[in-house]
Length: 218
Image 1 (cartoon, rainbow, N blue to C red):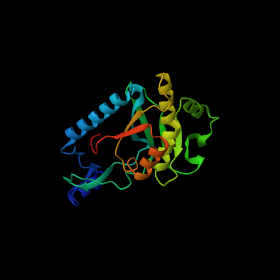
Image 2: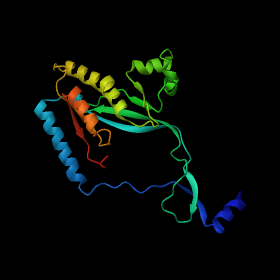
Image 3: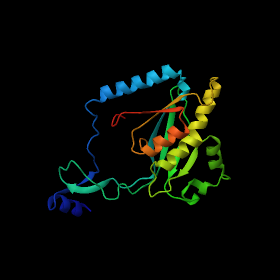
Image 4: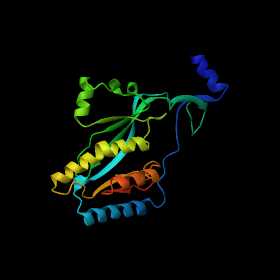
């Protein structure tokens, strides 16, 4: 092993490196953009008398179940290192939501596939672990695509099965009409701002205002 490493370094100029990516950069106008976003939210909250529990920010994160490799050999001094197969990992997407009053909403997990075999425990609600998760309000959604990322289908499931029931219950607790105006803040992912999704929200849940966090500011 020592001989191999010496050969790679001395003869090929290679060394073991971790995968790297260019640092995320904020846009030049990020302060102005986020300030305007804050003002828009403040105006909506004041104008519609929206209580803190009815202001929800949702975001997506990747949950790794099995990591891919993150090391490879590259020329000595390399600043950008790509690793073949790094993205080939077992994972799902978790849609998390937090209300302005600190309430953490149940999670939506999104799984690659189209059948129950792709879901935890085969979606067998008789399993005690899965039954407890469902009891707590968590939902497990199939992507019906070749990835586990959010798409139009999973977004509709999230809104219909998780976000809307939450808003309706909180409106009732605060002695508001069940469909009194609420505010939902999300990122500007392409599927979030797609014409199809925005039209569906407008036609189906007009009482839910959608605000977007400025691009590259999260």
